[in-house]
Picture 1 (cartoon, rainbow, N blue to C red):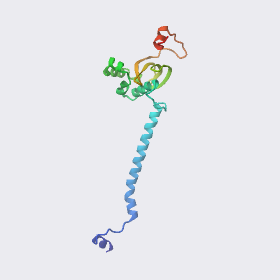
Picture 2: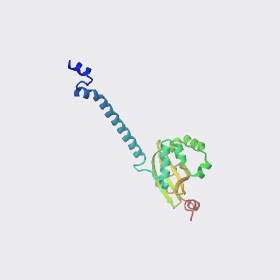
Picture 3: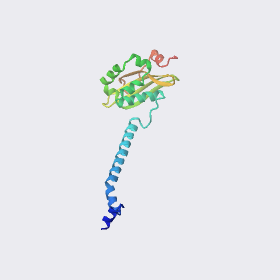
Picture 4: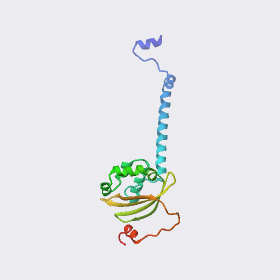
Length: 186
């Protein structure tokens, strides 16, 4: 009779705190589960990024950083991003469609498993870098990059990848023409 009286006089019936808690439990569990899933996904993504990047962010304001940023773009299949890191001169000579064809026809080469800087010769506005690259299938390549500064920003002006033919520990002779190309002041 008391419940009926509360309903007729416009006031609410007394609340049952246990019933309310049981009613909200599934919603709270769902929110907790969703939060955990989001946290797990974000953490996993960050760990994958850190593993590929060697734990270091690539600073595209350095010669080595812009090359590593391009190699990361290759690894993630972001060809438009990789292409955008080339100098205006390179992009005027090599259209994106040609670049895309070369990368897609040599796919494994441009998806490295490991990368090591073998040498770097850098001045204020020019750098030559040589990387040793190991593809996912175990093949080894050498990647030579020429990087230049235009209006305070590093751009990849030339890129040459080829199969590594030398054996580890073997010396390779350089000609004077090679040194003049690398070191323009010689």
